[in-house]
Length: 138
Image 1 (cartoon, rainbow, N blue to C red):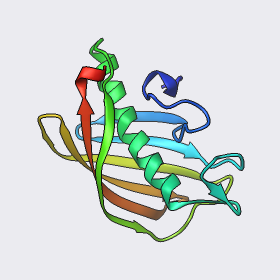
Image 2 (image 1 turned 45 degrees about the vertical axis):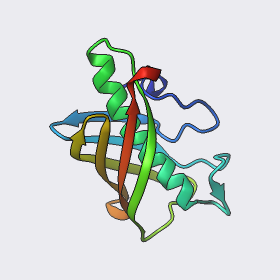
Image 3 (image 1 turned 90 degrees about the horizontal axis):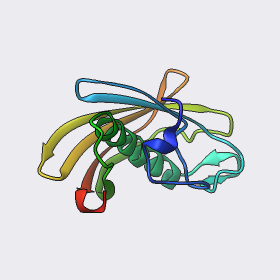
Image 4 (image 1 turned 60 degrees about the vertical axis):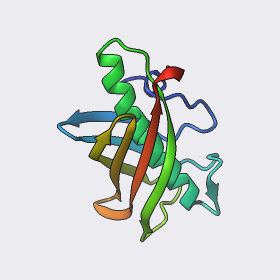
């Protein structure tokens, strides 16, 4: 996807996804390179909040891609909860994070996802997240 801003509602300086790499079955993939001026970077490392926001935007890009491909308005999503967040390593400025988002369950407007963030073939973070889609805001 050439223009990530077509898929997510966030705008600078809070865009935390550079590329939507695709979707297959219930799995999608995004990429993000950490840059020094990012508001979630402190001492050349991306914070936990930055990783959570990246994961949420990765899930949003998936939803945006699906709705855009169906020529439907893209709904706004809200984080309902974050569970089992584990971080084994903070990404540094210049690192590229590849994130896999797997849909575990969808009930009405609530989606449960599991995300895995990888840098250089090392898993650095994982979590489960519940996301509420407000289709009235689309």
